[in-house]
Image (cartoon, rainbow, N blue to C red; front, side, top):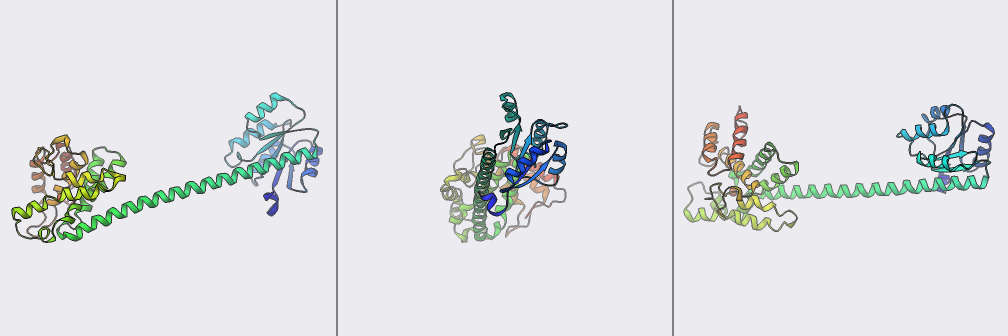
Length: 345
Ligand SMILES: [Fe+2]
């Protein structure tokens, strides 16, 4: 037995009859460390200082009887796992049923037969040790799975951030734009009462909303002057390029809705699909509000950050035409709370 190979298992016997205790000690002490205690009350005192691997507990004792001691043990979070073998004077099925229901592991009957006692004790300790080892293995397995899951989540997050940075690297005027749009979108979703999962998803979807700009010429993106009609049309394909890139992420099909639909307009005059109202995916409607807000509150080659009252006015004008009124109202509320106008590039 592995308990005895390194350290002897420790058994506590609790019996008011000293002769019985001595007898049990004599049978067990060759293989185990045995401590004998003569009452339930003293045993409970003893257990505050040391935890045995097994308890042999007499049923009939003056003061606390075996059932009361057992009840105490089962209510204590540090002691309830210790297996208890109950010692009874004779076979009594009713008592045994009550004992098992109260959490006793096994029963032994007086008079004691050494071989039988040793067998019961061996078996109990082995079963308990097996149970512990299995539980440890299960715990390790659970921990490993949790670590893998956390690592996968981190990997996903880092990949999305890396992708988002590639857009900002290509278009210096959108420096930090993806991150800010993601932050604003999450805040709007939070204020709209959306779940934690929704908020997390919209953050990532928004981070990648402009990913399609990777497919647009850098010269056009960086052009400080007014764009020609053909240059403007070349920029307008970025939602389609973006959604096509992200549609390959099959684990999260929704990832591409922001890229695809953030230039749709609530009145149906946007692009690329000309969707209107509720037909525009909700997350894209939120991202559109955040995107428009950030465009006005970021520097451009041809202008500085717009004054807050201008931004507010523009949003009021866009509400219900370009932008979803409900989410625009939330953005307006955020502006009104931003007394010192900190919310900008
Ligand atoms: Fe865009």
